[in-house]
Image 1: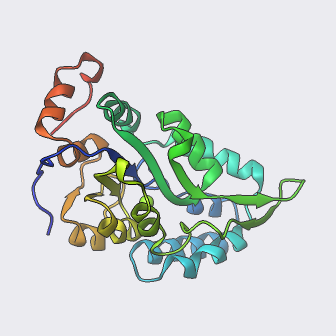
Image 2: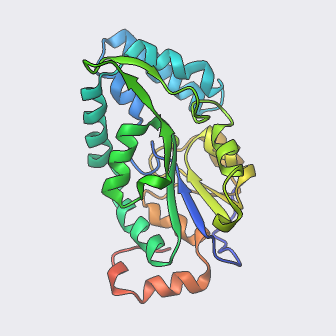
Length: 244
Ligand SMILES: [Mg+2]
């Protein structure tokens, strides 16, 4: 069961966000699936749902989904634009507020790196703090394979990456909607489940801190100390940021 908002006693130095269904209201792989025939699309969405619900390990569906879709470079570029168009309404403002408080903000995603970078750019998240899965295309922009060296396409990938972050970035917190985010809770000082786009029952049940508010700013009640929240309330740049 989740607990009511409880500000941390000490400030977090880094805040990580998941991308799909957290910073943007779409699932990138499913979007790419809609470009293919009905049967492919349904198969892709079903695989995603089972992985996000924690019924299947991510690696059991990852390569299969991409192989079936084989997205082109142009399609990946359009997906980036779609991530931006469907960004959660207050995501850019939340990122700006966290930066104003001196925090490092990053994106940790099992999605495709190119499209996730487009969203990061739109939200003001520095490229160096974006971790996602690279894709290789041939000279004509046709899909070849994804980068299997990154850990992010496997269950446990986010956990491993977060556990390896340097000491000067801690304490660190993670915000996300899915099973791989909840799993990574063990590697951060605080995990906040975000159900503002879609509530995943396993995450709502398993997360100590959870919000189903459609506003990303609702997570700040769990991420910022009382002093930090006060600082934002008196900063005119963030007058439109609705803290709880
Ligand atoms: Mg997600």
